[in-house]
Length: 117
Image (tube, rainbow, N blue to C red; front, side, top):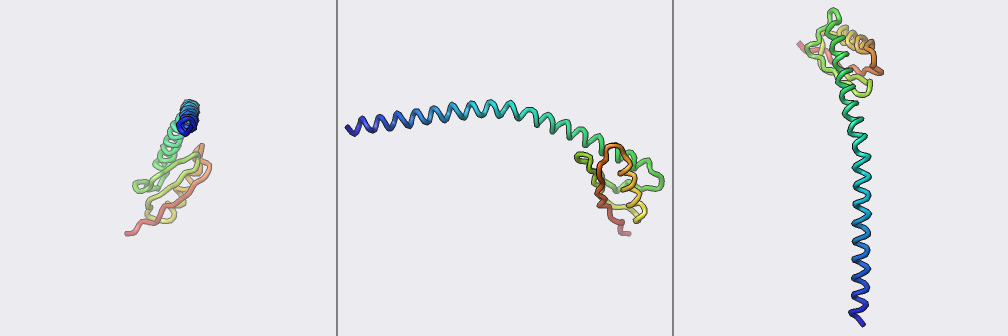
């Protein structure tokens, strides 16, 4: 009698393992299909960020009287962050204003510091 109960329990465990394994495979296949779209969006967003960063760097380089040799630009979703150093406060303010004037820029975080001599 004990062996019959043991076999029933073993059969139940096997059935549960098979059911869980089948469910896990079905979930993985649907997850793989939905993961492709965010990856494509992520790639497009990175390209847009790089393009905006290049536009801002180009505008800074064209600005009269602005030393851009120590200024770094990072763009993310329209938000631009300027870091690095500039010779004086006027150039720091000018860099922020130039960056705000670039098409596609929604906000500017100006973290440029005055260069120590």
